[in-house]
Image 1: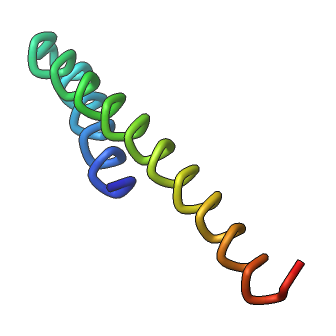
Image 2: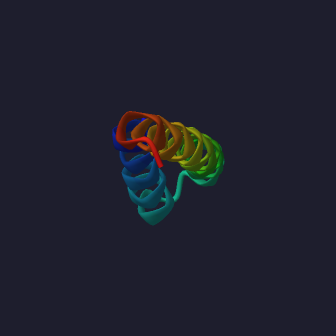
Length: 59
């Protein structure tokens, strides 16, 4: 997911440099959405991993 966010960010930068404002804005919006989604999923899995680790170690 982070890979796709970076791809859309690069597409937005290139489109913006070439003067395609609409495409650049859309690609930047998608990149932002994917990055926020990545952060949320990462945080959820981090919490789940910490909870599972505590159950395995018995703490």
